[in-house]
Length: 332
Image 1: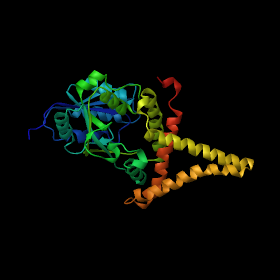
Image 2: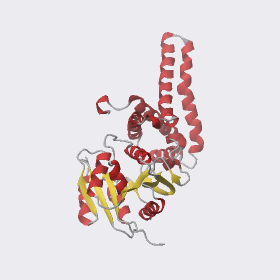
Image 3: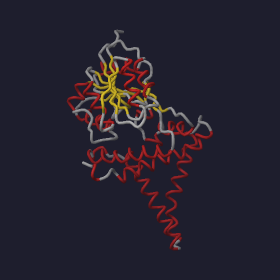
Image 4: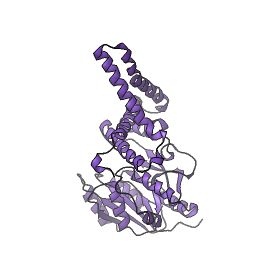
């Protein structure tokens, strides 16, 4: 087999990533790739040593380029890195994601052989503590985060979206890059426009990139609330993309809230017939507990105890974010 030598630009949005940035860049540089390679770090205004680390990496390695990202958001970072890069294939890598051996070689091979505009694989969560292990397990389950191939796997072939992605530059430029309105879900939105343009997004399950999940409940809730808010913006912009998978969490969240309110109201007013409202939160809690038992096999006892809390936090935070949406001033 001939080596894959198409020049590759790796673009990386970077913000407050002192914990992982050097390791992530080292994983890219360690790729056994036969073609030209450059890494463009778009660094936002961080509150830690991220900018210092990025500059040291660039000073030590000529293939690493640092560009500023004053807004500090992911889509702005990706577009800034794209503008500063030069090669025909563009591979997105996150500063807290770690490429497996052979990743660049394989995504380039797939771009060459499938003709797809974007190829990618799965997100492989690896926690650093008991809570992180529970999050990683939930994020690889249809119950925890839905049935997207890049979370739960599936057959190789065309897909709606993939994790990260390796793109043809000409397609990105034709479509105007990432939409900077979507501070979250910008990858899903771009892949939707790629498919609407008649191009293919290609998924392959044997490519998986390690991802570090959130380390505590507060950070997880904030992450999923924001994801729900911006998914609402996706549905507002593209109503045809609404599906039960996106609406299940907000419907459940609303049902639990209304049921709890009715039950409490019944207790306050002395109307026992309203106690039936408690069936919604109790039923949901029992369902999550029952589902988390088989899902938690192989985890430590502490992670198994945390798993139902993690699942409920993901569901209800996402649902509340979707119901609440983003502030009106930030909507289109």
